[in-house]
Image (cartoon, rainbow, N blue to C red):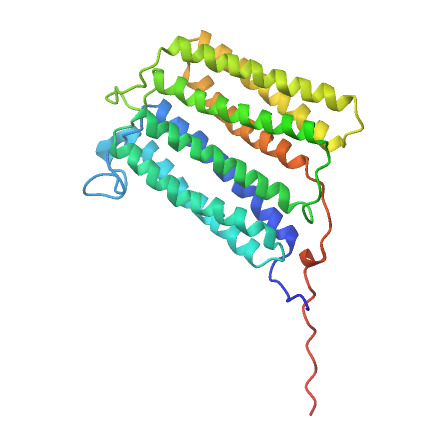
Amino acid sequence: MPVLPTAFSPATASRVALPNVVANGAIVVTGGLVRLTGSGLGCPTWPRCTDESFVATPELAAHGAIEFGNRLLTFVLTAVAIATVIVVWRSARRDLRPLAVVSFLGIPAQALLGGITVLTELNPWTVAAHFLVSMVLVAVATTLWLRSREPGVGQPLLRRPFELLIHGIAAVTAAVLVLGTVVTGAGPHSGDRNAADRMDFDPETVSQLHADLVFLLVGLTVALLLALSATDSPGRIRRAVRDLLIVQLAQGVVGFVQYFTDLPIALVLVHMLGAVLITAFTARLVWSVRGAVTLPSYRTAPRPRAVPELR
């Protein structure tokens, strides 16, 4: 069966997928800025900013501008996600379509969850869910981009025990992120001066549990790196482990410094960026285990030449 011509090459799909990763990460950081500046209820209702206006009004001052600005970024993210879906759908890379669709559908889901967060006056559990869904979308967008850079999905490049260890690292990373939201939910930065509801946990206890999980995560990553160094494993996997370890250590340092300096806003924001990077680099490690393979169906068919009309 002949392959129909496509509108976009796989390389174009890859170029569009990268901004999708950046946009998903950026909106997490800007959302953190909203919370850390106490602007979580800068727009006190949803989907409007106020009962009478869709946009921030002068009466809402800086908090309204910050919150409304973050809402506007959702439209930028939506445009990037739609562009990604269109390009992927009209390229030969049909295997990328599910990831592109999930990446897009996550945006309205996040918008709805963000609305619930506002309407519940920044309930810490909905705030935590809002953040965790963003982490899932960052992982999906990262996998989409990495997968788009290779012609296809091959067989695993490592033996089963190594694969299990990598999946264990991913699972512990997820647990670290979840417990991190609990630490945040029990901490002082609620997102608004009047949003006094916090999670009913002792901040010191959950912070210690969070730190213990981080130590476990770093230990597993170091063990994987040492084990791979003793084998002839592919260099791309070793590089993925090394880079992830560097990000983990940097994130750990920021976490400890912010804890012992009473959570300054700047460091907390850097820590949120670190969470995005941890998620992206973990997704990269999980993906690196799969080898690349060239599949004929992924090749873009040449456009048919115009046939001159006979007179």
